[in-house]
Image 1 (cartoon, one colour):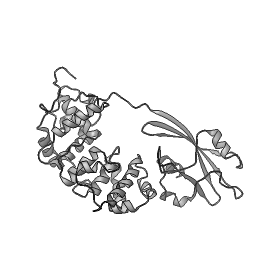
Image 2 (tube, helix red, strand yellow):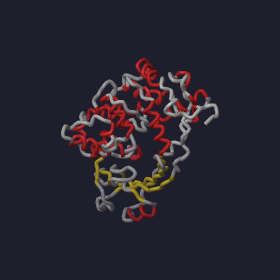
Image 3 (cartoon, rainbow, N blue to C red):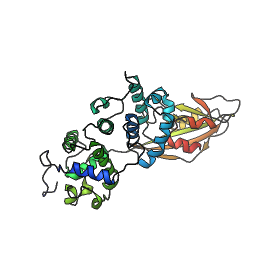
Image 4 (cartoon, rainbow, N blue to C red):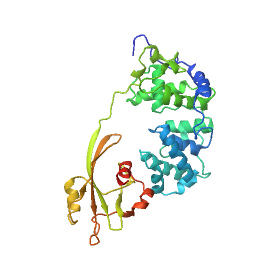
Length: 349
């Protein structure tokens, strides 16, 4: 931390930040998003889950379609996981969809069939972390609780020139305490939305627009000319690399063979082409086919923790052949009703 700055404690926090942000959000913040101006916890919860690691512009269309198909938490609970995953196609991070369904089942089974009204109780539901629970409680029930998602960590780290390494759970807990101490006494809904608005636009990861920030005069990182230095996180994920072979197999009726992935791991619960660890295993599985499978251009797919190289091979069965792998034959016109990973949808299209 620069020597000119004093470490932030709960006694020297910029307590003017809360009222200032509330006033700014009410005048300049976002107010027309479809999940705003509602206190329906189902709609707010759905938006919060969709917005995790996904841009607002991407979420908008998915949110509306999802609500049309599942208007209430009871409708979502009554649906099959396959239906939910199919509606989620393209949003990625499919564990969110699985937890969404699990959570809906739990909520619908409650005595009143409704969401709990406090952040502490909400955080006990599947897939709802502390920050998401706080957002729902603040927006729907007016509870005075702090949020601390990725964007908010960046905003508050810069505001306070918080030098603690957020790879450390102890330092993250300290930032949580600061976030709670900064809460305004009034206007918790506008304050919570204001933090989100700042983090998603003005206080961006790179090239923050400090001149437009309502808290520029209070921001310790800006005063030191080091906004982009924060938040501090030293531990970085090491990206791995994975390589597999895909078999696109069609029968004479024009049906494609799909297999469902296990309930855990990458693409859990999604339907994919038969997947092989190496080319030799694929050749062994297709040894009885006439001719060699067609070689298609390889696919490079980036996931959170690793890069996945997929080698598609296409083969046709004749009437005299049976499937050499377990799975389900699906007509091409019915593929849209199956939850397929994005690279497979693109390949089959």
